[in-house]
Image (tube, rainbow, N blue to C red; front, side, top):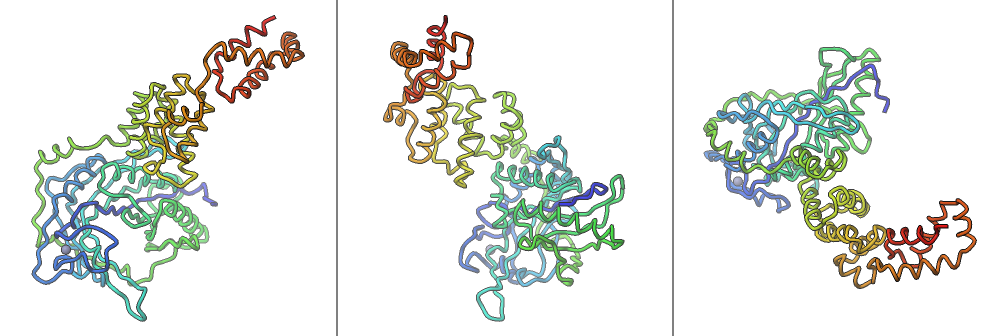
Length: 482
Ligand SMILES: [Zn+2]
């Protein structure tokens, strides 16, 4: 991209997270996907006259949890508001949301963009709201369907301050936020399926300017990669306009991933005047501080705390601690492997971040789908630590476990891979190799020290890698001494 260094990009995000409650936000219908259209609905979902919404208390708990995780102020008195607009997938003609008094304000999230220092990103607010249904435009000639199954799905909208300055920072922010909502188990974080959706407000300004430029709101971003690409495109587009003496228009634009560009959304869809007013069918929410403290006490260890603990307790680098705490499942895997091994934490970390993740990435598998169980990987590093097998043989045992299953103990026993540490057996091999290369012995004794490696290599080859390298080196040095 031809990002112009005379300008800086300013980005703020609005993220909609679908909450993983069992039932919907205002009725008892199941909160689940993939059912036949309009089978998960009731008169509340379909907004029949006279029905009344009742707030699902679990939605409130999840909102508080998320607010605490993002270090926000939890508003003890907050209220719902009606956001009025017409759309076929919204039978009530309004969306129940929060407006002036949201449940969370003034939070923050620390990000670690690759190659840059840690940075604080402000969270303006988090509010609860309800999702709409879906219009379906396929399958019938000249008409559209409305599926209300999604109506009533609880959402948290998380709004950031305009603190982000690049596509890379935005990517780091979204990854971190997604990891937190997954740690909290409030949202599955799946952008492709729309349970974690993001709109980006993007503007540019000259370096040093104090005023923000005019922003465009980008929608239809269904992966972190697409968010980043859209920001790069939009930055260039806006700079081009300014450089050509044109104005940037405040508008909503849609990201087109196939053509790699943003284009304006058609006019009338965004000419909204929502006429918010307090929701008359729901009482204001009054929270007891004791409830917030009770929820705080059940919070899991979050990525930042885990990161700090992994560095402190296991002496891991930023990189290792970052990779191993990227998800709760990853961190659990590592700690289970570690408990099964007397090896040092760094070498167990190397096996997880190197051999295991390398192989999982290659096969397109998640850590939860790993054919090698954490206990087995721990046992493998224990066998190296205890000189039962060499690091090299461990790699082939690992490959065997990955492809065929089994424990390292079984595989090593079945294939006779145990390291030979018996001095006498190794010495016999050493003598054999030395007897075959008298001229190399002479060269070594004449000062060609690097030939030691040649002898070690020959002996390892003869023992199929099973000779203990420490014993081999010791014996060779003694026998080759002049
Ligand atoms: Zn319902």
